[in-house]
Amino acid sequence: MLVSIAVNNYKNPELLRLCLNSIKENYKRTDYEIIVANSATEEDTEMMMREDFPEVRFFPFKENVGFQTLVKKGIEESRGDYIFIINGDILLNPGSLEKMLDYLTTHPDVGLLGPQLLNFNGTFQVSRFRFYRPLTIVYRRTFLNKFKFAQKHLDWFLMKDYDNRDLREVDWLMGSALLFSRENFQKVGFMDPRFFMYMEDVDWCRRFWEKGLKVVYYPQATMRHYHGKGSAKGGFWNSIFFNRLTWTHIFSAIKYFWKYTGKPNPRENV
Picture 1 (cartoon, rainbow, N blue to C red):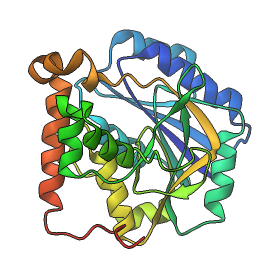
Picture 2: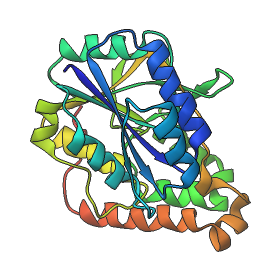
Picture 3: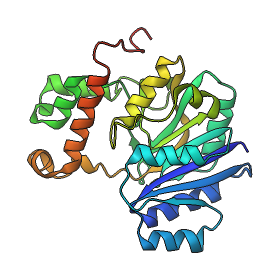
């Protein structure tokens, strides 16, 4: 089998339905399987999977187990030479996965390959970044982001100095849609379980780079992503005092910086 499509989902059966239908409608090869790992599974999701998608291998978790656990389950159950992990809020466009597979099979030095992500209205969505610095978190999460010096740093982090249409090696890619070979995965291993939510994709990309495997943004393939940005809702004060996801992000960032204290950036000389 060429590719396993491992979908991770959390409490959104209607978006999951759209995701699965987009795979069936827009990936035209037959050499694949679909796996769904679902967190905090509710009855309507189980019923939908059982009645409407019986061919999909479905692995429900009763608790909210976090992103990296869902990804791990999908990889563990996969049988393909290549594994494509996507969120349940991703919609494939025609030919997008075929293009990515064709590129990856001819570039074995690429560890992770990500498409260009678009909002549902077709506008560009940032999905490739430079590695975080401690100030990045401060500027993103406080009123300081209104100042020009902070905006300049955030523009650097968001890679605004590069054309969105250019294929290029990047520090890290959003974990919403990533393609990789089983062979390269085995050199790196699973996402770090210390990260329940947020920063696990940053850490994973860094570990691929440390193994000499490239992380590549591939805009020749596009997919749509309903990106909720839950940790950014409610404005600054509501976010800081009342949004649990904001604090999850901050604590994950602290774990990330602690993990890499004193270690060289594998991209510094690239």
